[in-house]
Length: 525
Image (cartoon, rainbow, N blue to C red):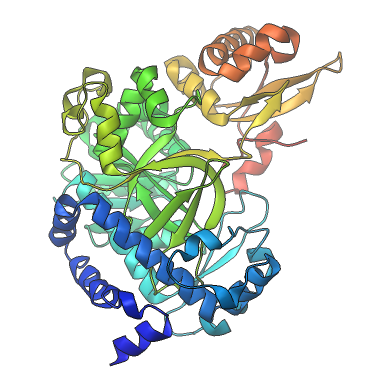
């Protein structure tokens, strides 16, 4: 009776079958094997259709029950009284921080305009865009996110005994606390935060007889390895995997880390929406590495952009993803346990989506199967073939990064990923560089030019000869990587010649990074 009343109240009487299906999904999600069997055997189109219906229901509930969202729709000239559940997503505008979050108080963005106290937590975003934001979560929505993360970890790293060391920042930030709760389902967890001394002492204390999963931001994992080498930790004696997130990672950095780790996978999420929205899998990493090795595959899958996006798989029953005309990924959280619904929410990440069948079909055009990617020689790491698991039939998501995470010189966009790729292509540069940032500076002739600031590790002097050599490598590398840069270089060679400035640890533009969760890659004047 209660289910029928809820369905009618949401205007979904004709789709009341979603309610018992919800119960089925919650039950299946309690066991890894049950959920994996669903993803192995459910037709991808059926998953996509069900996910869309769930997203429509979530949108309809927000229209009916979230005061701030109803008010927002009216400002966007949406006739709320004329909306019906079927096909509702096409009639709703996008939301983002500026248009929705900043304009309506937290209570008004919650169901019924109220904040329940029991079981509710507040996460804080890192403030990488300049202003930290607060995001409220119900107990149930956190549990679902934890199960999703736990599933991807079990799928990628296996089910054997696992000691997880969580080096993400602790405190109010969403990732640290929630990753601890999620990975506690998979084994022992110690939450050290990004404290290298604590991590090394923990590993020495427990010894080499365990399998370790190290969590952290990609640059931090590199620094951990370097500091461990200086401390004589003996990484080769340990069995380690890594799970990274919080920012993008190039395949060159993955290769660098794979000298010490068995595998390195990344998660994708946004505190605005949810952590663990998507995760790299053996198949998605293999697709990305194939696209790196074969430009024709990259163009067929991702378009003419010369950048190599990160590639993930995601659960369409939890997150309904779309792509707008600006190639930005739009997300609707399709569950009813969300305290402050996010409907067609845009974090302004550029990317795209392909369902499992579409990805498989495009690869077949090049004589490649998803299952056969395990045997592709171009995809191996520095220590041999990467770990492989049979692909699950989940859709693929690819992400380039935030639309504004770039500098522009003479109409050419230069991205942090370009610089990271070039750094990790050369082991000597990789060993020297602690961090980097990009900016546009005006030289003595009043010409705007790209500037690459390098923060060097201890023991690497900032010599002019070294900087000159690196400058030449960066210019040649950018010319090869970036079509925009190559075109602009031919027209404006003086303007496109990069300026490389080197700094000791914590100096210059890196002085403020010591207190930041994430390093700044773009410095605005």
